Image (tube, rainbow, N blue to C red; front, top):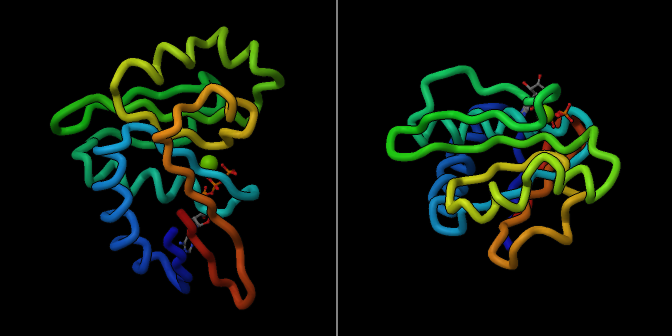
Length: 136
Ligand SMILES: Nc1ncnc2c1ncn2[C@@H]1O[C@H](COP(=O)(O)OP(=O)(O)OP(=O)(O)O)[C@@H](O)[C@H]1O
Ligand SMILES: [Mg+2]
């Protein structure tokens, strides 16, 4: 378990680099935390390191975005609007998880029971004095 306290965006870079290395191994990484905690921003940094050139933004409407990295494709989920596990199954989440592609998942709570053991869970939070924390 690692715990990092950040006071500005520049401090996100080494954390993104560490997580980027880890997600290439574990394949599935979840990002939890309150609204605005920094989930999408961290995913943007990780995707940049994976060589994604296109815009990385929260896939609020489609639930999943697909990006082409330098060596492989990446799926970016935002499950915020899902109401049940059935809905997660309907969008084919299991197939994505089984595909071997890197899956980065915001708001994973509803699908927790579907995630494999190797999943790395990253928890982001607002802290006092405008700081943020990232735990994994
Ligand atoms: N480590 C950080 N330091 C300073 N500002 C940050 C950091 N991470 C994110 N931000 C800023 O916080 C705001 C919200 O970030 P972001 O959209 O990544 O949050 P989110 O957790 O994905 O939100 P949502 O719950 O809506 O999906 C953005 O303006 C972003 O620039
Ligand atoms: Mg987001």
